[in-house]
Figure 1: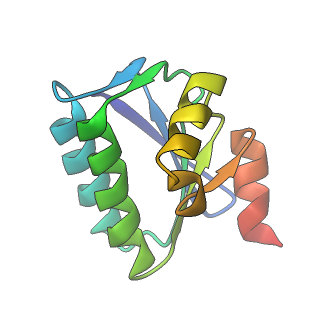
Figure 2: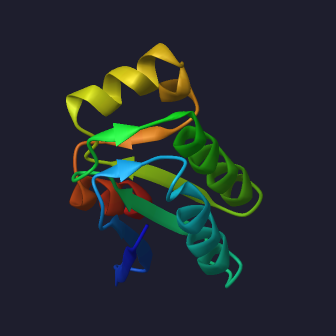
Figure 3: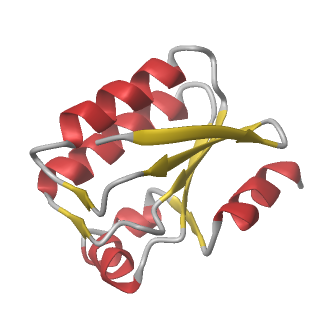
Length: 112
């Protein structure tokens, strides 16, 4: 899983460069995210707009990153499509994660 990182208004934005978060790439995703979080990042928007599929391993990786963030900040999920939103609702993870419509809304959520 390749992630592209950028900073917008003091918020780290991580964009997934693949359309699937699954057993084959979830460990790389988790390692890249935890490496960035280990650099003292406190506010993250995870751009999921291009994501089409997440399996249980992918959900576990998201939860691991969220747990790491909960100790020092917050991670917001931005732009998940309808399928991913349904998955998050079915698994009740929509109660764990802050979910917004797009990256701009995610960045604004940290600014006020």
